[in-house]
Length: 123
Image 1 (cartoon, rainbow, N blue to C red):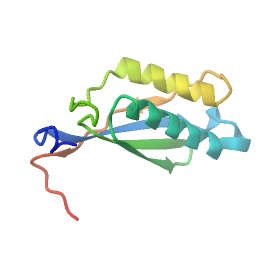
Image 2 (image 1 turned 180 degrees about the vertical axis):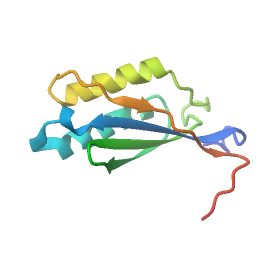
Image 3 (image 1 turned 45 degrees about the vertical axis):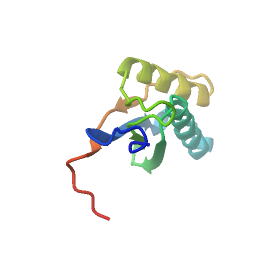
Image 4 (image 1 turned 90 degrees about the vertical axis):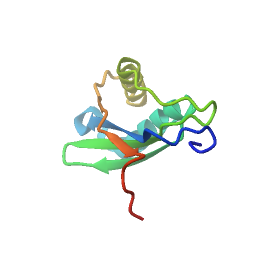
């Protein structure tokens, strides 16, 4: 996408982490719930026109869902921009809906620029 739209400089990939405490999920369906949350938030970002991948990590007391986002839209070539307020509200909405309308407070983190045009990428 970046080559097609001429957006080959600057930040190429963005990262986003969604953290959810295990105690806020139902024990009997915890893995189904975390998978549904990961998918729904991925769909939310993808629906804005950005390619996105996710990976779920299980820690002792929480889950972390890492998202990698292509910073150039496949729909119009616009660059991805964070609106933390909107993104956090959407995360709370998705997580609360998946866990049966129970109010849950996930933590949304923007870790870093994952790939910039001056970075070395090893294959």
